[in-house]
Length: 75
Image (cartoon, rainbow, N blue to C red):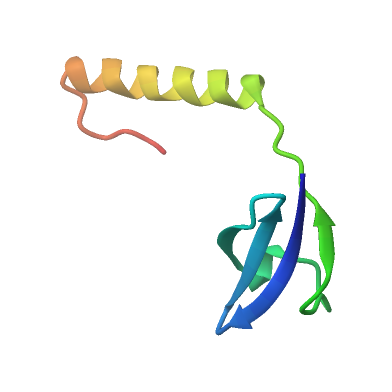
């Protein structure tokens, strides 16, 4: 997937994802330093099943602690 910086608006880059020109506002701080209008990016979204499972397990543990009446839960 490809995207181009169309313009900047405040702290956001307005990016267009092609070929459908889907507009997405991305915080500037997430982009490489020095990028400018007209710069193109290769965009890859990659699933992270390990992270998903770790977070699911943590949430399940917290829910069990709440059911047992323990009020103090570490984050």
